Image (cartoon, rainbow, N blue to C red; front, side, top):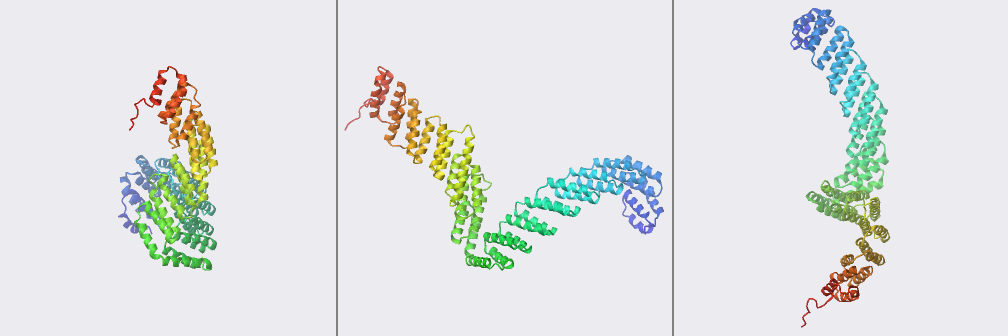
Amino acid sequence: MATRDTLAPEEAKCSSGADYAALALQALQEPADAAYAKELMDRVADDCQFTRDLAACAIVYKALGEQGRAEELLQTAEDYCMSGEEQVALAEAKFKVLGDKAAAVGAYEKALKETANLDPLIELAKNVMSVIADGAFAKKVLEKAEAKIARAVEYGKLAAAAAEHVLDKDYAAVIFNKAGEKLSSVPDLLSLAGEVTRTLGDPARARALYERALAGATDFTAARTLVESAKQAGDAVFLQAALKKAGDLAGATGEYIELAEGLAGAGDKPGAAALLDKAEDAVTGLDEMQKLVAAVEAHLADDTERLTRVKAKLEKRQANHARYLEFQQLEKDATSVKQLLALADRVQSELEDPFYAAKLIESAESLLDGTGYQFSRYKPILVAVDRNLDDTAWLGRLLDRGAENATDFIAFKNLVVTAAQMKHRELGVAKARAYLGARETALAGDASASAYDFAKLAEASFAATQDAAEAGRLLDIARARAKDHYALTHIGHLYAGMGNAAKADELLAAAAAACGTGDACIQFIDRLKGFALPAATLKKWYVECGNHLNTPTDKLRWAEGIVDALNDKPWAVEAYAQLAGQFAGDARFELSRRSRADLGYYGRVRRH
């Protein structure tokens, strides 16, 4: 019973006009003690200075039938109103004291302008519904909140408010649709799916979100979250799909066993068997082998071949346990890429355990990651994977990364040669040819690509594949772009290196023909000298070059080159003699001949 006697003890807890007003409203509950309620209001109303207190008191006076007093306090409350929170109290009072919904909405509008965050906006919408039951305005409040949110939990809270307090499930569905469009991470989508189930009870809409989360899972942790969500939702079909997806993303024995047990529990023995296959392949220690045997015994005991095999492996692990412990200690002590790769070689050769070897190589690779990519530094990783493992996916990733970063010729040539010479030859040659083809395509589309660019490509191609026909095709492209004797000589030298003497001679002949001056002939022969050719061969090509000269001046410069470039004075004597008729009385010719072809010009050699 709400009487003075029962409510008096509560007075001590009151500290504001609003507190006393709340106590007075309790006093007006049946059986009402109106005298006590009025006494409370008369005691505090005149001392109130805040809108919230004045508005609360006005509502009580309205209930007591003192409309004039209520309106007087309401006007004072409006005069004192300063904040959005106070506008909410004012709106309630205007509606309850004056019955003026429009005035209440006006106050709510002012409150809405001053309210920004999600929780206060939801509270404002709830107040609107509890006071004036205006669903349209409450929705307007929540629509403002939409612009303030970005997380799944916020969308869920907003949608729940729309459904539970604004009584608008259609709008709640719209909120979930917008959230589904904006959010993409697995945790967010799972959170949304759970909120959809709780708020809308719409399994089809929740399933669509679960499917998106399943498609977006890219690591085992995310997939495990999917599995747990499926269990909580009680969706057997989704649970099975989540377990399979997690199996695709797992990488450790324990993970595979955990998921296999889940599939076995769901009645999918083939799926469990597939995951236990992966678990068996990934075993790296005795404890993991023991767990695998236990899992096979528990879920696939009728698969006698499997059970016999894993038990035999367990015995091997147990027999070599000391060696494994030794290697594990060496692994802990290893601090460099070289140490880890050497240990991987030992593990594979001494224990024939490719999965432990793979773990060691992965550790070596992780030491390099984040230090700046250079193929020469990652090459030992590639070689170790090729030598110790049968993992073409890993090899392909390492090769493709090398191709992406091979910006200079040396790195590119190293890459394609390394690829083509791998133990996994079919993969390596295919990759090398693909990289060569991609680089040729890029050069073909580059107007600035030179003969040297295609010549380098041909050099890399032959070094990798020893395919002389393919390298020759590229050298033909290079020759078509050659603009001088330098490029032609370079191409000829590459042909010689490939063992094609005929094509080498053809290109050197073309280079000799391209030398239009005596100086060019000297440059030509200087380049050939760098190839360590026999003297007779050098003389042959110098003669060939001289045969293409037309002017006496160029022929004289060519003759000077016999001494300057080839240091052959006897031949120079012959050459000057042949040119003498074209330079009768020419002082420059005579000086050139004396300095280069006169064997006694610098004094006679002393005889002993």
